[in-house]
Amino acid sequence: MRYRVALDLTVRHGFWGDAPAPLRIAAADPGRLARADIVFKTDGTRAILGLPETAPPPAAVALDILAEPRAIALTEGWQADAVAVLTPAPGQAETGLAAAQETLPRDLGDRRVCRLLLDLAGADPEAGWALSLRLEPVAALWAYHVTGRGAEGPIRVIDPADEVAFEDLGQTPMPDGRRARVLRSARPVPLAARSPWRFRLEETQPAPFDPIALIPVLPAGGANLRPAPGQDGLQSDIYVSLW
Image (cartoon, rainbow, N blue to C red; front, side, top):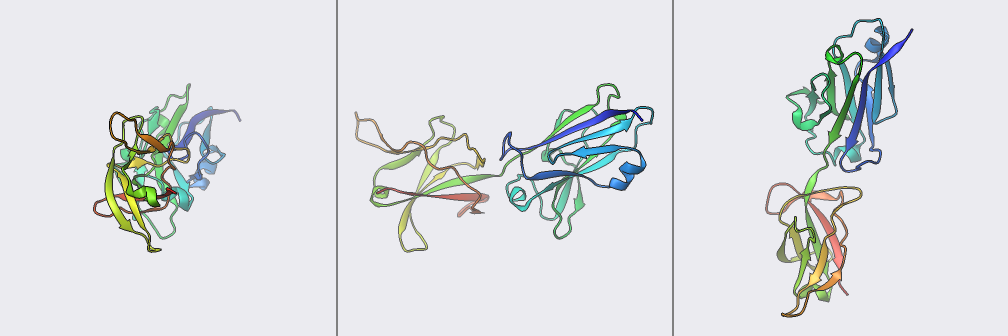
């Protein structure tokens, strides 16, 4: 029996960029695919559906995107009580969780990020359907907790790209009794395994002298997320010591 590629699905996660993410594509009903002689092959974040060349296109096929716990916590739009259902139009090139208009109830231990309902009958039988699902990373306020004698000076966090500003929240006590100067981003910043952000810690000086770069590239925000004190959203705490 000769087959044609009806669907070529790729899943990418913004936190991992082009690197493989801890995700897996699974058929919601493998038995149904087998009964319809549909070939389903996957290597984790890519799946291919093959249809017999002479067979009529099947009804909508359901594929589930499963995630390890570390990926769930880093996925923007994941819901603890519901599974997003995506129904991209046949031939559509890209989709994401923001496009979901329906949901399914989520049971305890359910690792699904979302379900894709795919109308293969509406796709081009000659060209096939290449679809990309992109999952966006969680964004959080990046809070630099600066300790040491230098934390009491005229310090600031600078974004050389001039896209993210930082607010000085002053001194705050730490669990070990020390105090830290907190410099927090004014808006949430997306997290990434290889962060593109290159924030810098500076000490300002009186004019006409230029600021002193204390730390040319600060550590990036990580997955140690907690509710942001004083406002909605999440916060990633980053600890920096100055002599």
